[in-house]
Length: 304
Image 1 (cartoon, one colour):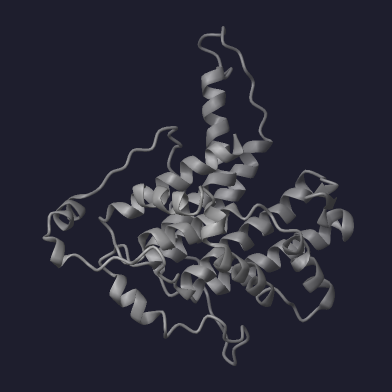
Image 2 (cartoon, rainbow, N blue to C red; image 1 turned 90 degrees about the vertical axis):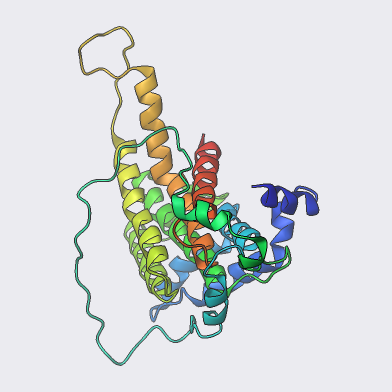
């Protein structure tokens, strides 16, 4: 994390200033991914993007891209392939896309308030190599890869789709100082708009060409739903009852942290880890663990 602190101090502790040109491109180009053949649907999908959020999620992706590009063993290949990816080809295709439902775990792992970095042996072996044998690391001004820019857009699309759905569930009348999408259009239109954004984000995700990143970001969707269901549950507190089903304040706090991870921190953590993966970090390299832990803790702190 010393590198991230160097990046911060270079720009007077303003991480947004460091990635400002990239962030401006993320915000402008994302509007090209959203249009539908139906003008009314296009208006809904762009609505929240015209009232921008704090942009913390894409900024986190961009910062980790700058901080770790060149560190991973797979960086040369990722850099070479970046010129071959066609991220902006038309979404329609002449053939039929077939899909199927793969076997997935039946439940997610139990939430643990503490997260420990666990570098594996392969990283220790890599760290012990002579300096000359390690991949050449990128400079602080190294360009962010196109796939990482697109990832920044994808995480913001997922966040925006979740806001469209949340405002329907919570019957919110305002969002970012303006009428919410359900108020401006309708609850049904907001749900459909959120679904459409998720569809476009999924297509963009598939084009990044990395299976691990696809799994990471796809799992965020189930996390969001898990978190919403958990938030809807009422937790009974009773510190004095023994042997019953009442929940102690500590247990309630852990449930709150779990809900916060699922609804907020998961996207930050997996977005940051995905940025590092797209920059060439492979299994066993500690930068992937650091990116996930940083995004996880930042996301929980941000929501708390």
